[in-house]
Image (tube, rainbow, N blue to C red; front, side, top):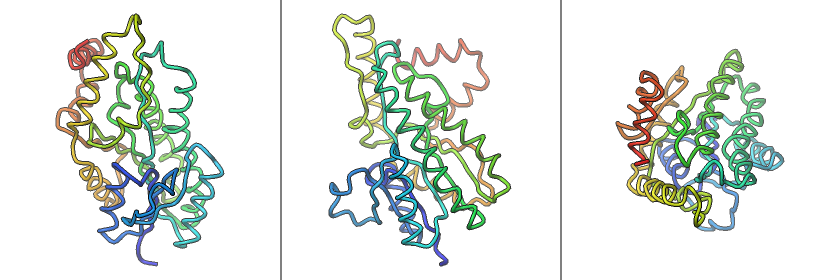
Length: 269
């Protein structure tokens, strides 16, 4: 089979659907995933497969189905994820565990499931969709930042561990894009008479404005395609507005308190 086979987690909407649609137009064989296949009876952009990244058996079944259908699995794009907002102090612990299960443990389950197949084939590519938020602790998004930051560090470690197998692993960190992530995000409730009530509500409103005014997810899809064309992908790729990408450079070169002040001003805290 000449065409490369791509598996995209969270492929039914948003960034995942954009990536899948774009890669299909470029001649790739794309399998996307969703937790609730019955919700998409008319989905025809590419093949959809049932998957819950938090369920290890579901992960193994999904990878096995792709290999059985297509005979190979060349590229994994770990895109499935969820948002979470709230004060560090007031976010319920079960929700913290849930977001780590989805955004961190889920991609790890996927990588562990595809690596044996990629070794068998003599190579492969894994693209972990993290976030620019994973490079910094953002106020009232601290747990989201933590999940994406953790995945970015695992990406760095795993690409060194698997280099001798011909497997490339990279991290693609989007900024704000116009998707339905805000609708599916867990919001810790704004508690009346909480010490954080006013400032958290203001930050929540600002976050939603950023997502609503975000860029076209197809920009992420084009970046994924560009990465796939690279013989030796880099470790990290940011994608987003100019200032979002500049923020990563500033994080590296500015003193910690100066950078913190920029974030405080940005979020009007």
